[in-house]
Image 1 (cartoon, rainbow, N blue to C red):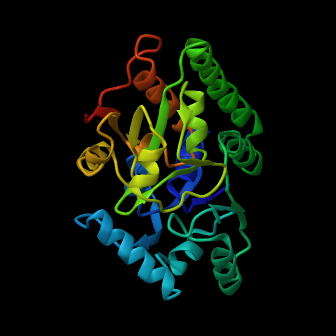
Image 2: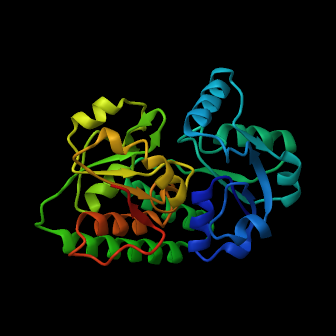
Amino acid sequence: MRLVSLLPSATEIVYALGLGADLVGVTFECDEPPSARTEKTVVVGGRDTRGMTPAEIDGYVKSQMAAGADLYTLHAGALAGLDPDLILTQDLCRVCALPSGQVSGALDHLGCRADVVSLDPYTLDEVLATFTEVGERAGVPERAAALVASLRGRLDAVAAAVAGRPRPRVAVVEWVDPPFTAGHWVPDLIAAAGGEPVAARPGRKSVETTWAELAAARPDVVLVTPCGFHLDGAVAQAAAVVPHFPEARVWAIDGDALVVRPGPRVVDGVEAIAAILHPDAVPAAPEGAVARVC
């Protein structure tokens, strides 16, 4: 089966299922594993926002959305040339990837008959369920079952390690200028790691908020996990967060690797967050995953 992934988390799922050799097309943002972007055909492009500030990126996204313009470009000719059997995309967030309807329309125009699967999890359980769905659609349900069982076993181990311990109040900042709350599956990660998510929207979309509203939730710990950034970017942006929470511990996290992409590494994220909240109960997070800022 020839697979095409139109979002980074789907690429990670494909590789976790041992289907990397069957993956023929990816996006310009697929960086895990690093070989995905260099060895596969890039069928989705977009603006390079490196060098832009969070406020500039937010302004660009809002202006594109207001104009009804696309944030991503589908290289239809390249996609057609790959002759895919299965295409993985999403309808969860227009800022994150091409919507499935746009992909289906392009396939109809090109005369391609690939199946388009939209992966749209809103909770941690739904994230895990997408692994099962991809495995079934790709013909490897047994691999998906083994992957999910392994990830659930790791979640159970964290739950056992933090059981009965005080649960710190945790606010997650998914964007800093303007600030956005934690939504979708992210509050579930906090709960699974032994924290109490505050100023959050579990199972719902993340929304713009204010620093006053976030501070009013009285968090003990603030996690800075900006979407689209790894740890160095999160550390840099955390400087704008610290003054708003003088009594909280502020940590930066590699958001793309551990939190905001709904792929297998969200369980790595639970383990890393648990190491922040309960350092004497679970192993330390890997180097390069998290950094205390204040």
